[in-house]
Structures are given as C-alpha cells and as structure tokens.
Length: 169
Image 1: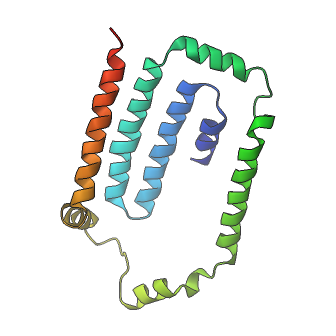
Image 2: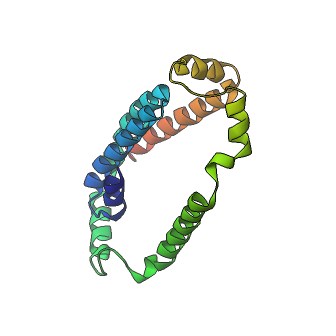
Image 3: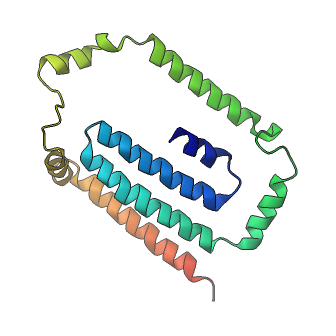
C-alpha cells in the first residue's frame, strides 16, 4: 500500500496514478478487515475503490488533451522529482511527519485514561459483535440528518458533473 501511494504521489502519468490509487484504497480495505471493521471495509471497496476511482477515470477521459500536453511539457523543464517550487511543501510534509513520529514514540499508549476506562467498563471489540447492525442503527437514528445532507450534496455534484460533461452548445 505504501509503495503504491508513493507511486501515486510521484507519478507523472495520470492514468497509472489512478490505477495505483485504486490499489491503495483496496489495500486500505484490507487493513479495515484486519481491524475487525468488516462493514467499513466493504464500504471502502464499494464507495471509494469503486465509485471514486471510476469518477477519476471519467474525469481523466473528459479532460482536454491539449491542456494535458501543456502541463506535461511544463513538467519536463525541471528535475523529475524535486523542484525548487516544491521545497516549501516538502518541508511542511517532513515537519508533519516529524511531529507524528514524535507523538507515536513519546506517548505511553498503555497509560491513556480513556483507554483504561473503556477497558475497565468492558467496552472491547472481540470480533463477535454485529458491527453492521450497530452502524445501521446509528446511521438511521443518530446520524440520519448528516447522512441525508451528504446524499443531497452528492446528488448536486452528480448533476453538476453531468452538466459539465455535456459540453457547451
């Protein structure tokens, strides 16, 4: 997953980057399976690995080929991986990575109060729970309004994409 994500980040070929991104999302679903989150894994495959990658492929097919050639010619003028204009973003990414690594190394994970309280109360995932039922109940009770708002926003995005794809006449 990490090598495919790295290829997506440094690749100059958009089509290959999209297919490697599919591999990243599919591998992430595998990590969800190992974390005993079966519903999230299936949702990851259906929504992201299926829908988002197909949407990206359609966007690639609808992109103006002349614009892609101009971008490709501009990319060939400098070094392939690191350019001077990308130095601030590289420094920012390295800074975030340093902070994350420092937190991961210095935090006493076994001494977290909320984790100890949950463990003492018996709130553990053993793998025998029906996660799909829990997600369904929460989705249709507690998170019903955000779920419906997101569905309306996705419908608006779909209508806008169809309008843009139709072209100007």
